[in-house]
Amino acid sequence: MHQSPLSSLLNSRASTVQRSVVLTLVVFVAMAYVMITPFASIHLMPNLAFVPALLSALMMVKGLTSYLLFLHYFSVRRISIGLLAAVYLFITCWTGSQLLYINDFEPDLRWFWLLWHGVAEPGIFLAMVGHGLFDQYRLSPRGVRRSMWALFLCPLLLAWVLSHLVLYGPLPTIVQAYGWSALRVNPFEGALFLCDIATLTSIVLITRLASVLHLWLAFVVFIAMLNSSMALFFDPSLYSLGWYASNVASIISALGLVYVMLRELNHIYSNIQFANNVLWVKSMRDGLTGLFNRRYLDDQLALEQQRALRNGQPLAVILVDIDFFKRINDTHGHRRGDQCLVRIARILTSMARRPGDFVARYGGEEFAIVLPETTVEGALARAESARRMVAQERSDDPGALPLTISAGVAYWRPDANLSVEKLDPSLMHQADTALYAAKKFGRNQVQLYTPQDE
Image (cartoon, rainbow, N blue to C red; front, side):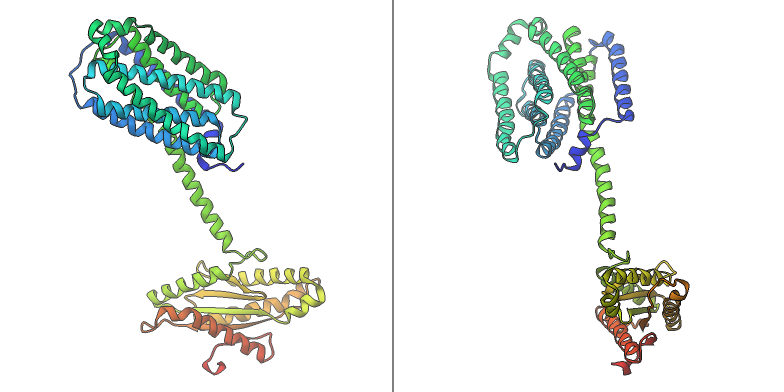
């Protein structure tokens, strides 16, 4: 099954370097938490702009992650990826609801945070279970399209319901009646910490952290687990050191996965561009001789004429034809005829000595040599040298068929008063006219175009 470049990346095995980077980050973050926890309750200067900025950044990063995961889901059609994309879509909507509807930072943020992780971590756990049980199966394209209704609408509906529950339901009443201790002793927060541990364990045991996606997803859940432990055991208040540290860690973990995706996508696009260049070059080559084809000749000759006109330098074209080639095909077969074409191509290529020179297969048994910045004497000398090499090759190789070539040379010196658009057909026409004259006067010779040949 064909996969997109992003899917190929996320399904590829995590490299040793990537594992080392994630392990280093885990150790660094864990040490930072150990150092911060004794001072978690220290109250710092309130920054009223921090919360809106944090929520905006989280919504943007989580939304981008959800979009990339949905692209991945469309390609591989695995239900576990669809569930992960839906989880990140819920987080995006949930964060947006905080940004739009939050009134009282103190109780609202706490409940928003608890319900966020209370839905996200079980959702990731469910996706990991689906990965272990069903990832050998793939949905049909029609099944993917149908599932998108549920994967899109359910997160949106759940975010809307929970937002109204927090803003207008019984949860704010609990905080007002019992204060923060009601949240601290509430078994929900302890259950959330255990859920984080179970989710992280499921990622490690089920996926073995084999792919890039699951490796960085484990890091994200690890950060969420540390944040849960901070809230459960140290209960940092708003604008405390522990509170700031937890939120900064959240944004770092959110950036981790999406950074890796975007970085590798950039690498993929570079590879695709390189591959496109290679394919373009191949599309401009003749399959038999390896020379450039007629399409490349037409495009490049126009560019060479524009360059010659701009630099005031001459341009020469040699049109070559194998004499009596049809007789060779009829007598010896097309296979020997193809061998003759390859031989001529090899000889003519040796005539293109400078970087700007090139040889193209014009069509059938005809070849064109384009020689920028070449005088008429130089072009005639190269054409005559090629003719002699072809005629002499049979004496060097007794098994080679006797071949001769005819060549027509067209020469152009730029004129500032001449329209560039009219040069390409006229130059090739002149070379073809000179080639016709060479055949008319007995073949196996070189002719320079003159107006009398018309």
